[in-house]
Image (cartoon, rainbow, N blue to C red; front, side):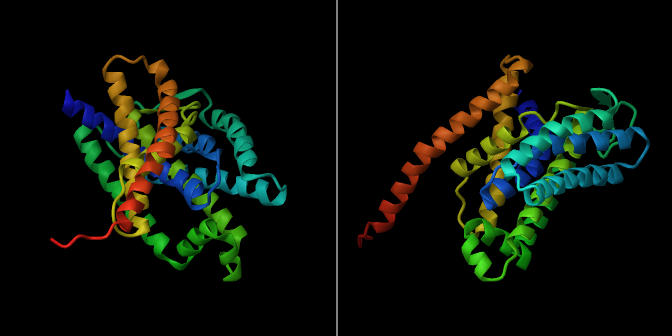
Length: 299
């Protein structure tokens, strides 16, 4: 029972780590809300599924899904800067419009990958979990290395202190475009992994992705408070939060929760995470400040 619970959590949760890492890029690094991920996630999965059914190799299919998601993020950036639409509204418009685009890509509401060659072949959950863990570890490592580069530092500074970033000559517009493209590219990449683990792509698969991502991020920040670099904290919080979020949902299904209630469970998880982050998180910070001020007694 416990083994199946953990395997289900890994198989369904690890692909979402990549997606929620993209959401973190805009939500935390840029302090903004980009609902495009709801559409880019479904679009990336649809493009990947259609490519696999057409006989294109799994690696190229994943690349195609990633590019589709990144392109959606670029269009959001164009709406924001050219038409002066706020990111939140531009993302909402894109998430609605991409539903029709995804449906055209699929041709039907759901496309099965039965008989198509995927990254995971015909292996079981254990082999899929190992491969997914390796892929996700590589993505997290590359993302961490990117944030240490000059461009990655500029991206972080723009979100934390835009005025200082401008004074240092950082192009804030370019960093916003980069954040949107990167976030939605990661969403497309994660969706490409999801459709290959679940065996199908669905036009509605992106619904609730943003809410789930924010909830997982807040859970991770509340549960995992590792010491070390800021980049390390980002990666660990996203990883832990995503897996805990999936563990909650998988556990709820195991004890008999109807699948139709999963979206409600996701919304409830977000509410609990926000409330806990608001009250328990502030309490922990006050305790930490109190301990920092307390003098050390000599024994």
